[in-house]
Length: 254
Image (cartoon, rainbow, N blue to C red; front, side):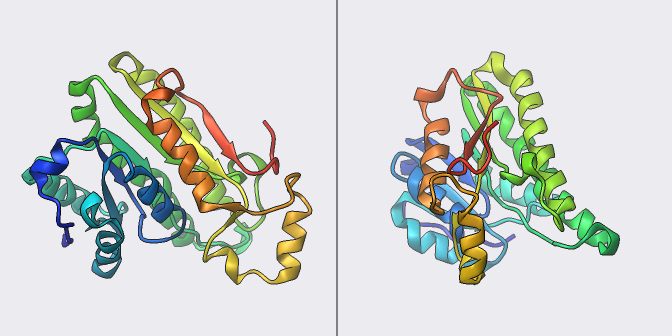
C-alpha cells in the first residue's frame, strides 16, 4: 500500500478526533471529507496514488490522503497497520467507497454481480471491523454508511447495486444493536439525485425526467449529503442509531 500525508504531524492530529472517509477523491466523498475536516483530522482514501495525492492537497494540514482498496483484504490490513504506526485511530468511519456495474440481470455477468457486492457491501465489513476496537476502548464512535435511495425504490439494470445498498442498511441496523452499549452509533445516509461529475454526463432530457419526480424540483448538492453525514458524526446525534437518513428532496418518503 502506498499513500501520501499532509503537513500536520501525527502528534498534532492525534489531539483531534480522527475521521476516516473512504472514496474521498471526488464527488460526495470529497465533500464529506472537506466538511468533516472543519472539526476533525480526516484520513481520506482513494484507490490510486494520484487520487490520494489530490486528497492530501485538498485537505492540507487538516488531513491526509492514503491508498486503500476496500475489495482487497491485504490492502485493508496494510492500511490499518500504517495508521497504527502513526498512532492514528479513527473514531469516525464514513464508508463511501462504491462502484457500479449496471446491466439487466438477464445479461449480467457473475463478475459484475460479485464485484459490486464485494466492494460496496463486504468492503464495509472489511473497513469497519478493525476500527471497532479503538471505538470500544474509547466508548465512543460514529459509523456512517452510504446507501442510496434505490435501496428502497429499486432501479432497473442495477440489481447488483440495489442489493448492495439494501444490504448496507441491514448491516447498519444489526451492527447498531451490537455496539450501542459502548457508546457507538451506526447509521446510514441514502442520497437521492445528487449533482456530481457522474450526473453531469446525463442529457438535459434525462435530467428533466428525473427532476419531474423530485418534489423539491432540484438536484441535491454533494454538500447536502456531507452536512447530513457531519450531523450524524457529531455529538449532537448521540441518541440516533440504526436509522437511514434519506437526502433525496422527497423523491422517496419512507
